[in-house]
Image (cartoon, rainbow, N blue to C red; front, side, top):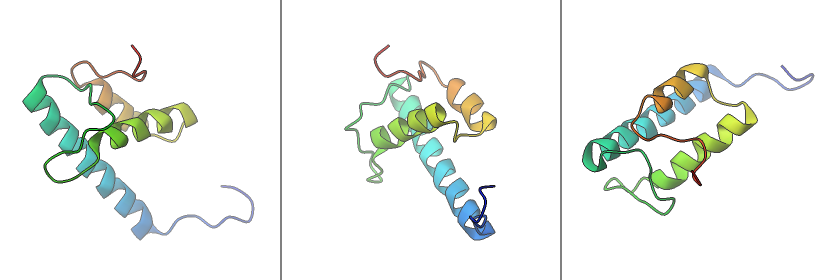
Length: 87
């Protein structure tokens, strides 16, 4: 950890994981409906989740090294997932 910076409380980490799982489940629903994981950045799903922004956030987290290997593997397992939206 960083010197002088306390670790996140367990509840905070659990909340982050739950939020990630929610976003991933909505992405899977999008894939089921559209056949691919290329979500437009402006896309908002029927639960009002800004799914396009969620996807962008995952890409940024990967660039920063702030995403788990398990999450990377799960995302990469989706049809047409890409870390570069311009591909």
